[in-house]
Image (cartoon, rainbow, N blue to C red):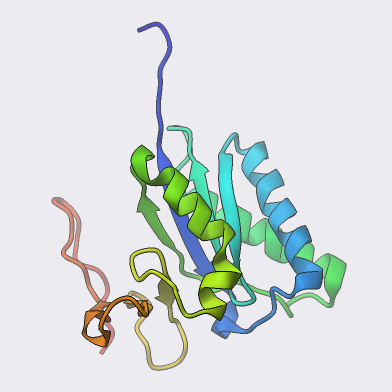
Length: 179
């Protein structure tokens, strides 16, 4: 093989600060365009972007030279700066500090793309999929490492999960535990 080939599909999800409903329709197009432009500048291919007024889903094909944490940090910082400079005083719009990122099989890209593009419909009809939605809740009283799956109407409520403190990978120290 002469050229390196990678297909590193990643699904990122992040929310607005305190899950405030501030990704309004008058801002959404500009926010998504800003995120797409920053991804292009980083040579990250955007496959799908969508969300609701309080969170964003981004499905990308990431080159092996880009760390997912750097991608998340950069697109969140640049889009927050853009919103504050174009739509209001600084500091009014900000994203949560955390995000969720998941590797995606190439076999699931089309299905996940459709899901992301239909975010408003899924949330309006309460037909979200727990395996595609993550509520990163950093509000007071909740530890920064707690990710809670949002329930789907197609699953019984007993499937609601809270995943605090996942097991560390080999050679990795355990995550911070809040008291």
